[in-house]
Image 1 (cartoon, rainbow, N blue to C red):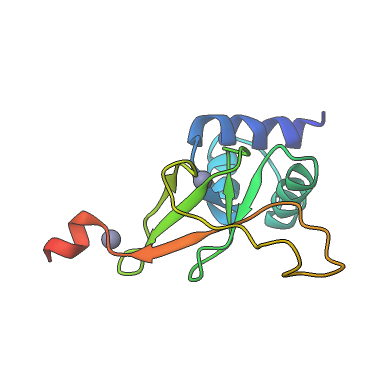
Image 2 (tube, helix red, strand yellow; image 1 turned 60 degrees about the vertical axis):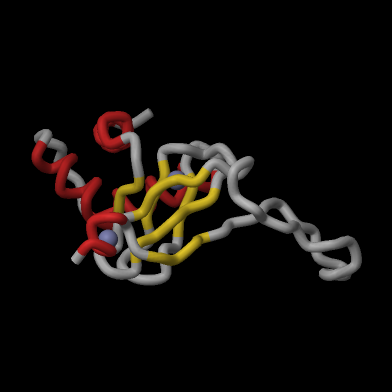
Length: 123
Ligand SMILES: [Zn+2]
Ligand SMILES: [Zn+2]
């Protein structure tokens, strides 16, 4: 593990949520690490490939990296961009029935529910 990777890992460990590459970069630099945004992005992408992190595409804003690599869904507020986890056991999610994707080997499901968070709904 390189020093750069260690710096990124410590930022992720602190964040324990959904963070953009830019946010990880800013936090790592603040901690004194010398690394480029490209290095942060490449390291995060490698961690996704290794199954250590998940990549979340909220539909607006940057791609987020998720500390929780276990299967779960997301709820995004379309007004402020807040993103929270949804326990997949609580979300009604129908997987594709057999035969819906012939010849396609599926590895998982990635669902983003859209709505408004409580703070935005009150406004
Ligand atoms: Zn909101
Ligand atoms: Zn998540």
